[in-house]
Amino acid sequence: MALKLPKGTQFGFAPVVSTAIATSAISKAAPALASVAANSVDTDDVVVIELPGWPALNNRATRAGAEATGSVELLGIDTTDNVLFPATSGAGVLRKAGAFVDLDQQGDPTTAGGEQQYWSGTLLEDPTGRQVQMPTFKNAKTITLPLFYDPKKPWYSALKNVDAKGEPVILRAKLVGGDVLYWYGYLSYNGDPTMAANTPMGTTATFTALADSILVEGA
Image (cartoon, rainbow, N blue to C red; front, side, top):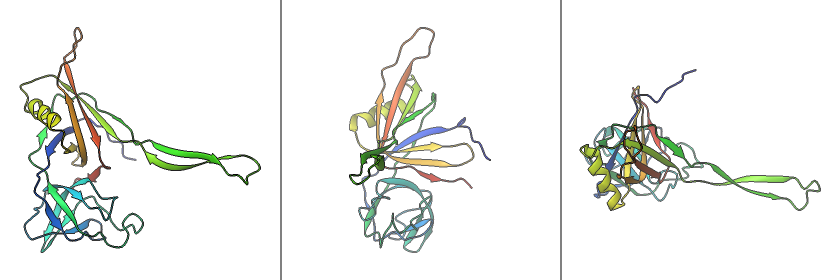
């Protein structure tokens, strides 16, 4: 058994560079390999994957691993499942993350969403009238990050800017021990401080994910 506490986790975010890097295909492997032009993606670049042919991989963010001639590893991504990743991926696009802005003066984050929803009903031929369920969709996932108010922090103006633009960003959570989580989605920010007697003033950033996170494990 290995229990891990979140103490020491640091969130950060980065804009996405608009320049598209074409990938002719992504392999069925663990980790998957993206076929790209030589030197277009470097080891440790963080990228967003746009891949209509494999919706399970579309809009997900990860870090690039080892480079080879004409390809680069996509860490944390396993495409060997033939149901989730049928046939071939087809062409897609990678977009690099810009410079990350790390957050400090963080409070305890809260998560919501991701709950499985169900269709419920009965079968006409069943004389017992027993109800059956089948899974349908899952609610959108959100992460709420409380941040203690300090307008001189670099993240304060950066968050205000991201909120005003309304463009998707990459969210990163660096965990103690070297594991890193990456998400792609929308980040909004309320920079107006909360006020209560004898309590530090706070602000709130809220992230809504467009796809599931990718875990890149530490060494």
